[in-house]
Length: 76
Image (tube, rainbow, N blue to C red; front, top):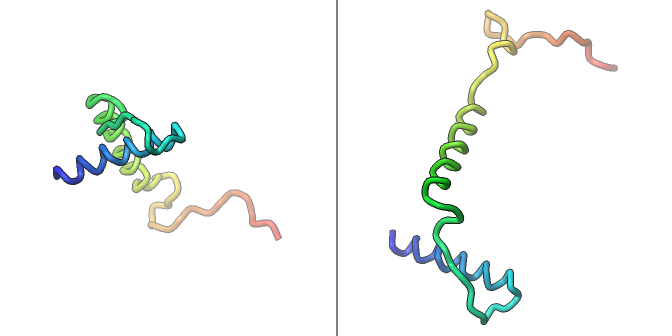
């Protein structure tokens, strides 16, 4: 776990130095882009969005389990 935390700190410090176009200059490293509370809220929103993608819209399926037919005929 310590190695992962150290690598994250190194990654952000290198990205900051490259953004300044001075790879040998000093830059600031960080572990989280935002505060802890904001990061947890962002993760929570991302997880909820991913869970919503797995849901099936009941209006798209007919009662017998087959997909409902479109109202418009296919163009030929």
